[in-house]
Length: 99
Length: 391
Image (cartoon, rainbow over all chains, first blue to last red; front, side, top):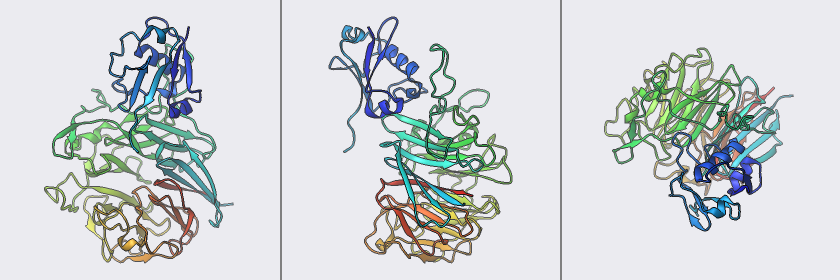
């Protein structure tokens, strides 16, 4: 079963894809594994979610899994089984900021 | 048939304004990259179909776009899917990583922060793209936090010219808009000579293609810094040169219009009779190296034209004597700003002058500034204006 990832509007446009993409991941399904697979599939997204130099999540982006904010979890922590099975999508969301 | 293409970067996308040589009727395309901040769009002097754009977002970071057909279609060079998913990327057009290597880099120190403390160096965005005068695949990028990058493969990969940070980078401080390297001037007669300007650090020059740099701020006087005549710390807003006189530079400093005739070794003030010498852009006429343009702004606390009258000022004497150009520009209730990269000239026989405002207007003059007309009135806030002369 593929992992489902929901992209914010501007990244969907940049990657010229739909709002939701499906990714095949071998091994443990973690934030890092999901983002690595996403960037492999859509290289234009490199640097837009994680900083090129540090690999850190960009500060105005947040990650949600099964209604939980996992932005501050370890990138190597296992994501919930419902994400790994594709029953629930992994959400990349632009933080609400500005007017 | 001759024509012009005006490249406009705005807070919410890029726009391309095209006209024939008469410059009366305009075709507008855009928004390109809708919803993104477009700090700068500039074409190659040697291949007008090659255009580069800096697309940026506080959320999603930096993207570099490239067009090879005059802005009709765009691509992100280096962002192509790699054939082998486990191979390293061939190149990433938005990868601006400071060079700290032993061979060519410099240690990443800190720079001065607004409160006088030291602050880590962090890449934020590309403010300015300056294509090479001789090679369409070579481009310089001025970035925030201030540094100069170079690509020689059409923006697929970028490499920092790190020696610039050795010019006392720890003393550089951000201006109100950030610590940006905003101006890059390439000497048309000497490819090893490059001028850059940084807010708020000053102007710098290399004579060896970027291997070493020196501050060129002697003669600048800035009351708002602890030592008004310090070598480093001046808030230079923009510098400009005419290709026929590359050792003569004109500067719009935070306050003061300045001029040098020896490549920046010594500056002197030429503000003359301007109503205020605060402002952002400064530009030189395409055919008259002593004719320069500025847009006076009331003050650093009130970023709009004095008296609500939008006036371009022109000097035909290289400064000091200035005349107001008002025909076609609003002379009441106008409270827009004109940002540092938002003025440009074309090189048709009768020089065209263009500028954009934070109110979304782009004005053009087909007669050197004597008469102005709005080309568009309702764009998002204009960040940058560049012009390509198509012959």
